[in-house]
Length: 390
Image 1 (tube, rainbow, N blue to C red):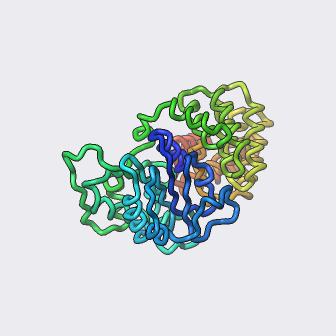
Image 2 (cartoon, rainbow, N blue to C red):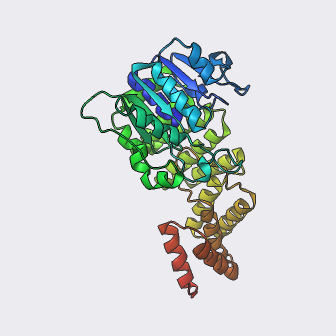
Image 3 (cartoon, rainbow, N blue to C red):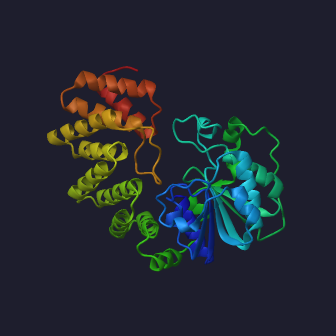
């Protein structure tokens, strides 16, 4: 799930007629919103917007100063500095309909560097938007419900309180540092998972959005995820592939092909389809690591001489080619991180005769990488098999 999915859910759920987006940039979100009326605001949008006529080229301050309209759903994703985000939030609530929602992006940074201002130019960056949300809660908690959904770098959801009593006043007195955020993340952000938040969103609402625009990549993507989550892999595959075919964004095509491959893998007898989809994903984004990892893991589990060679080849290629700081996909696709690639290379190296290399890689994995429990257990088992003490 990501910001676009959440926004389209809210539009469908509330039968929203008007949508405002602050910070359109490249249109990847704006172009995929399904709403009768869309208004975008950006002082310097990119030139490849599908509907540039819907974007007002101005700052958010300039827009709010002259705006007289109300909007059912408002998305805040402009300048990622706390002072500006707070101004955008305070202005947005003034033009929000009584049953409307505000969605604000990048509210849950997972590292100190990701929220440092100014941006260092390296790695993913959320800015210090979260500070604006805390400030907003301190001032407006009596009037608005505020949650942060733990997906896509944190999607804040703001709506008018439906029940005015009792009110638990929110007041953060600690300094707004990343260290304090990390200690109080769940309480300060009112952090919840998507399933808990979306329990009231029905299949009918998703299908209505799809019927309204069956060519929209996100309407197909949302249905694919829904079928995937309930184990209906055949339907999920169909919608993942439809979404990939209808998107002109390589990153989204890539993710949908990978998720379709994982569905085929769950079916257990469609190895050619698994391999073909993952290879197609690599051809679209040859420097991303996820498809390489899944192909290497697939061949590792085949447990034949040829498959060990294939596993070693894909893992080695990935370690030499991939950009491991390329950021996350919208959903988890069973890729554990860069150490997963080294693990696959270490396992297959043993079986292709590179035993000393394999041993050294496993030692490196154990000593220098923060492994998840599954990989740590496997590394220890392999080292024990190799009679290596650590």
